[in-house]
Length: 106
Image 1 (cartoon, rainbow, N blue to C red):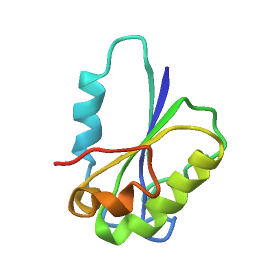
Image 2 (cartoon, rainbow, N blue to C red):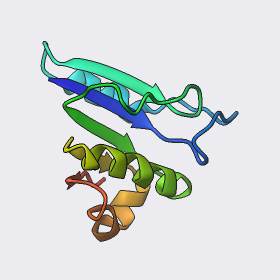
Image 3 (tube, rainbow, N blue to C red):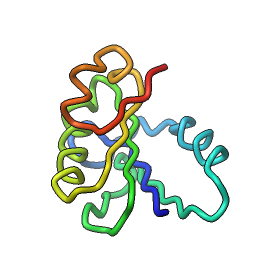
Image 4 (cartoon, rainbow, N blue to C red):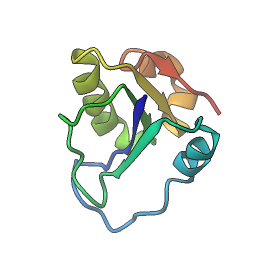
């Protein structure tokens, strides 16, 4: 399975506040061997939205929610399942479920 992890930026472009998304490192360590993982931090590089993948996971903070939901909608329109987590989905899971197939809380 190919899993794509995405950390959206505020406006879909580079930013200077690029702290490492540690949740992705933890999830990578818990992923079974044999799965192919790809990581994109949109604050550092563009996300190639048309690259084939089987599952997309996004970490979303309130200030990146709009862009995160745009990305999630793009993939769901292609029939690709989307999982979201982070501060914003944890506090507003009902909202996040409008844009994702699954919401991780905590």
